[in-house]
Image 1 (tube, rainbow, N blue to C red):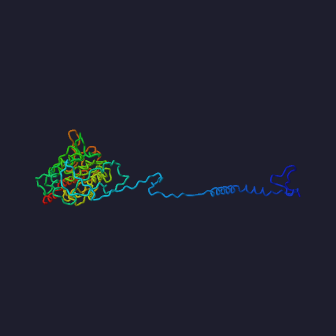
Image 2: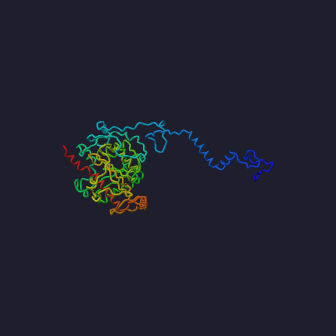
Image 3: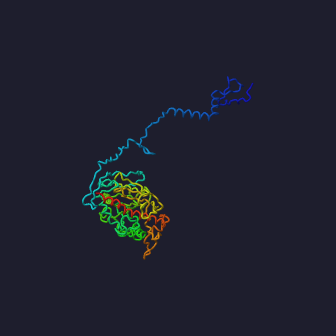
Length: 449
């Protein structure tokens, strides 16, 4: 039998096809190698995939994986790299040891113009104030001279005065109230007072921020307006003579002019000099008071941090830290204007409490109003409690900061007659209290043997 399709004579059989047993006329069959190649060709995608995985498994399986576990240091900065060998750890700073028995006692030199007063000793320290300041918000200032001032002179710690200390305060404060017109013990509204308010001129700050200066003299602004309004509200019984020049805290003028209080304001951070610290400390010893008012209202402003810090240098006694002025303080309960029972809102409606540091015999040594009343006082009011918009012959406003006036509904708010009247009444209550606060204690001290 012949194959149905025999290969023509002289033409070889196709590759991979052979005649079995070479028997002529039989159909050729593929060899096993040809069949394998044909099968692999049909499955080429599966084959290449298998070969790829085999090769990958051989490569990865032959690799040694390891993880070097290194303990993170306690002080490694977040989000960054830390190389322990490249950072030198400094030992923690040791806080100074405060010992009441080791506090130095320094007597003011005989050349100082402050009155010589025999006072009971106190514990003193130049330690930092007892409040926390975040490092990120703390202003960067030079503090080279902060702890170089002389140790504070003695202050009376108890609620009573020695007879000698009372004599020194009486000598310093004797000219604040007029002896006639009711006298001591009479209702405040019937008494007469005559004094001058002084603006603190201090190192490193913008102390003239709420007044306008011309050739070194104060020509208008917060203090002139405060004194003018006090005179009008009291029908001239409280006579305040505007000081034409600021008071240099590093000079002896403090003890020559004997102000009942010194108005201390500004926007900036500052560091008082050693002489300023010494003069202010002696001024408080003889009965004076610092009235600090921030021109950058609110807590933790540049001025707020600096004033709190620097006043703790003036009164570094650890037993006399900052306190909130209570609602039963005589500034409110024995006030010239009894309707003012709390600190009024200041510029831009800031309504923080008032603070103070006790000075001699527990009386106010430093008063602090963080609501920016000084800028409120740049808007004068008339005897009717309305904003005084009067102008002089040159058509210039005489009682109002004109630049602030044109912005008073944008940058400066709470500027209207009723709000301003409350701040002026509060300022008058403060001034009258600071002029009369020693009278009862001096009277008791005079009867001491």
